[in-house]
Length: 426
Image 1 (cartoon, rainbow, N blue to C red):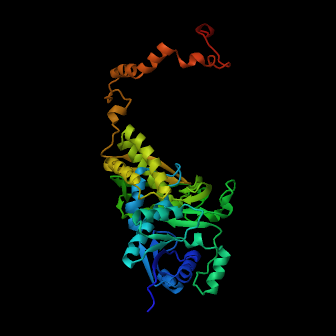
Image 2 (cartoon, rainbow, N blue to C red; image 1 turned 180 degrees about the horizontal axis):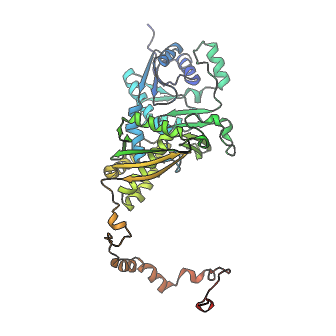
Image 3 (spheres, rainbow, N blue to C red; image 1 turned 45 degrees about the vertical axis):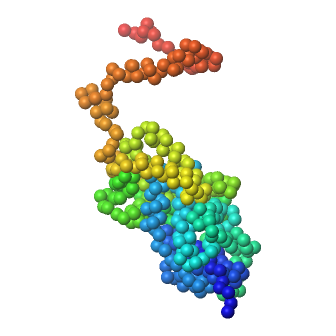
């Protein structure tokens, strides 16, 4: 009786790379392969067709997981609450999906008794790091295999391999781009996009219309948040998936969410990336507007630093690090008062905040108004406040001289014209 073969759980998309990987891991590496296909709301659905394709490729079992709700609740909405965008631009769509897929791979590996998990990432991108590091954090005893990184085959070689071994690969028109998509955004790279001077061609975009051709009148919508989480659009309470889908559809119709970014990859290279993220842009704009009402100046200042660090950690694949979890403890505490409504106008690629209100608003009309009849601000206190606030500068100037004393000559412009009272005819 032959010894049992080791078992490997492969993250399976159903495309060329992972279909070939099933056969390669089985016949070249000696594994019994179990596949895991995760639906995060992208362009490829994890369904029975995908399961059957995996089995026909040689898998002994195939799992599909509808993880859209998990993705939003445990990964997207916490990141929205922090206000994180990598390098101030990218809303982390793909980067947020990887730690969830890694967690599901580990869970299925435990269930199936596998000692190895595998993914279809190349050796040049960020995703290989995200998978490898996440699995190491969750299950240090598991080994990670990366067939596409390890084998010596380019795309033409993979196609020939699939034909030679009769591996069922979907016959589709090959996209000139590399694309990854989930509910939170669509990432597009390679092809003509590798020239950062080249404007992205129209076919790079699939979710959004050209802002120049979007409806001129735009559209107004109202979003409701409960403790930092979006819960309703125009008064209609929606579950997270339905809410994000609607924001994507609405934003897409108005050309909202196109992002063209040259970013710094973790592996040390700069990469030109094009993103479509209508829901992320709409919800992030609304969330920031609500926080401007409900959070103090110091909290907003420090929270911006937390957002930058959170974005770096997530982008670099460190979702399961202690620091990311500790940052969430702070960010989560800030959201207790972030409840209220934000009114937006979307149109021609832009999102404009036109109203916001909250029962926990720190904006007080009686303090902000310039109408003396309703003004509750203590104007007389301002002089003393200014005196104390400016005390360090006055002391410095008195002891060390003003900074301008060692600087250039007076900066009054040469073209200045002075009009005296005597020059005016009575």
